[in-house]
Image 1: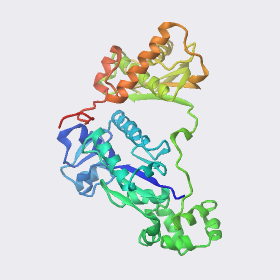
Image 2: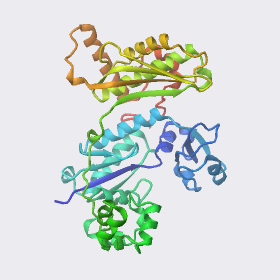
Image 3: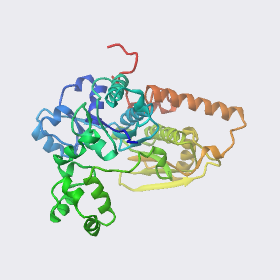
Image 4: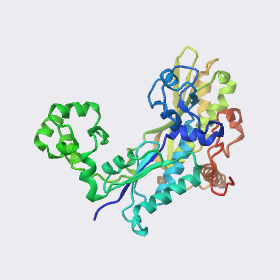
Length: 406
């Protein structure tokens, strides 16, 4: 039975998220970068900026030369994480066999689900409608449909932005004949040069080339390259549960100038501890060790770890442990970075449920807060102790949700 694989790729991801969040940026050439006040590179360019020739990884000074009216926007990782989680949640509604391929794209095996639709195109149109309902019109995705991951990825790049491309089985050879080698995911310019030296200049030539000679040049990758040349890719779509074992979970932040005092840094530290706690709960993990890291104005970094006394996933307990470390470690008069990391992780299911009503109530409270923040955006509900860092909280801004009125 032939598989049906989708590759769903969000268009101009970080930039389109910023345009959706801020109506004043819509329709304008923008790039997402680090700090706009310093030399940096383009992390993502909006569709309007791309029309001027601006590309990802381009130096911001060069991007401005190509596009004089370019607007530089600082990145907001919390906002992107929220959108990514919701995006993947939409896709998992069609199949649990979803393999993230970065923060803005994923493969999904819909072989069984597609039988419920007249055509795969109808399914993809429904997915795109749900993406627009969840986020608004600025955030779009391009989708490739094919029998394997290699071809699905190739297809999603063929019509951008906001496109749908299907490579039918009977059209594979025709598509590969007109596709450059480097358009196949996994063949970069260096590999192309090595193939050219072997007399291989096209995908069909790669598929017809003797496997032994490819293996002599590329080792075990030679077999994979030959299959790619034939449009074949037997690799399965692996859900995120196949990720490597998590060793630790942490968050750190370089403090802006106006937060560089011990008193103003503590609410930031509290927020970081809450983020670590949330990530532990999402992975159903608890931590046996907490580490606090601080950096001073001379770029000296100090860190120390401590055992809370029991395994925890509660940000408040992570923070209180970090404060005990602070008392022992000391805090620089001008802290420039603070971080919290949880390690010695164990699955939460290996521990019995708490017996004390206070602990059970606390778990219920955290679960409700997590559900609200996942539904309405991080920072919707947070503890009062975090209010000193509220200017660092992500703003959902103009994200459109079901039920919103245009």
